[in-house]
Image: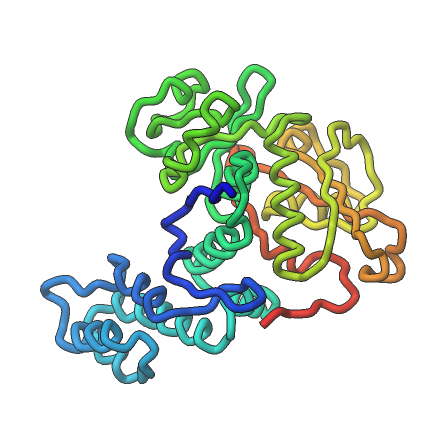
Length: 334
């Protein structure tokens, strides 16, 4: 029996345990990963209060942190970082699983830094896709937690990791597309697919999101897995190669620009040429069990909109799939 290859070590999934349902369980080792971040490691000239708090949490990362301990830190930025981190840690500790903590944040509308939310999405996807060998699926899943920069080139729409697009390095692909310099970005294809696993933590592959190609279909499959893993709901997601004019009986924007476009269409507005060009794709989502959806939508598909901004930026909001689907009773996993 073949063993699935590892990927996304940077998610920290090796530091977490799993329960009988395959969900992620918090460990002290995972909490200590946060303490290793440069935002929290006290510099040599840090005050005694900050150094004492850091040492105490390294010894016991679940230790109760009193408000006064943070207030005593001299540096204002350090105080803010510690407040955010301790509040987030306490939220994780309050839930039996990482999935449950994420769902609670999303459904309660709790405001947390993008960094924390993206990290949870990253490790949940790593757990969810553990046995996946389809690298197109894995690359598409990166879009859930890493902002992208999209560029049209010779009829294709290419998504590259935004952080790498802005990096100072040389790349034949970047030169070809006229993008800012980046670090060894290659468009994922069958010839280089095998290299994905060894370079997965570099996030340096680009994905073709052109209509009718594997990228959009793979992203739709990730949506299916995401909804099933977190909500225990079976759905089918298909990209519409020729969406035309559809009646948006219900829609979910997969990013802020898509939500803005969907809201405009919902109110009966018309899109201009530039707004239409910003739509990357339209997905049709159908439920395996129609009894799960709101009665007034029986037999109607749900549409998912994916869009980029005028400058090609795309930051997906996978939480919209949790809060935006027309499910009768949303069961929040623990």
